[in-house]
Length: 188
Image (cartoon, rainbow, N blue to C red; front, side, top):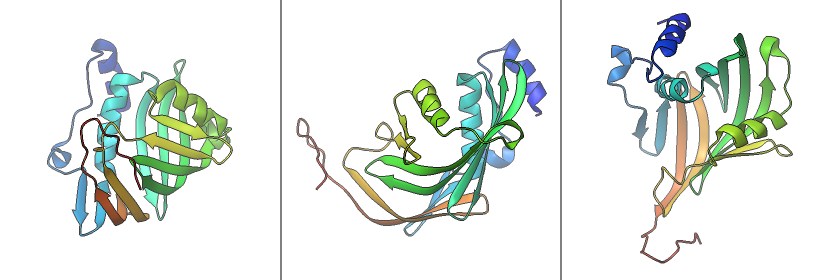
């Protein structure tokens, strides 16, 4: 389905979500092999694009590519009707105490023009729904995953690398603590 078709369908029906091809319908988002978690970038794109189409009118498409220890995210957007592409490169991917973090290496606007990193902070405050924060001094982006990961979960990540269309997360030691009602679970 081409983007122009999606836009016309979107205009006709605001509840429309992108379809899923039959080759992706049965693929898992995550796989693990021993202590290596593998995240399928094709599925990440599919799910993100379905959510973005329903929530953010200006965003047309997200594309995620990985190489080594970094990810490049490209957004096709339409700002006041004008199409443009924005890209960001992140490295040093981490997961710690139910927070995902990474370092912003580069942010570029249309025609590859560098954009100020502070723009990520503005976008995080506006669209992050309280889950995303950005420190412009250190260029660190944090995503609060506490809504999605169980309380008491402590996961350490040994290494993150991209291999083809997979993000491979090599896990180190971790634990799941018992959560007792009324008693806050403070990590040691």
